[in-house]
Image 1 (cartoon, rainbow, N blue to C red):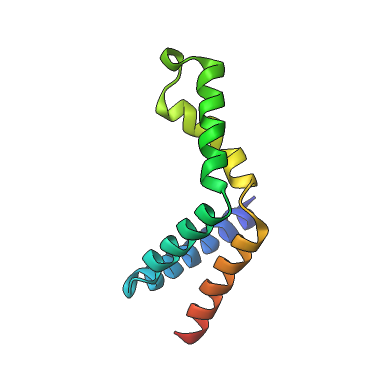
Image 2 (image 1 turned 120 degrees about the horizontal axis):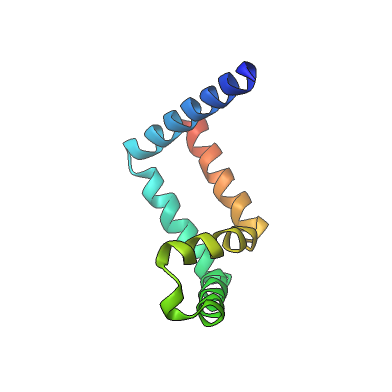
Length: 100
């Protein structure tokens, strides 16, 4: 268990270092813009919007909060991001970190 916690701590530390590096010169914002563009191009946003509408219709507008909606749609939203979008973003991050 201690080994797992140590590994998790190191991963979180590395993730924070990567975020800091990406934030230093605005690369993180450029990657977010790229992600937004790719998700819009592939229709992901429209799919998520429709799923939101379905959940609201199913649960009832008065019965659902924004937090409940986010909790409900997040797993599906993540699962329908196309692999090529994930790969492109990952490659952009790797390329940036290798150049730095």
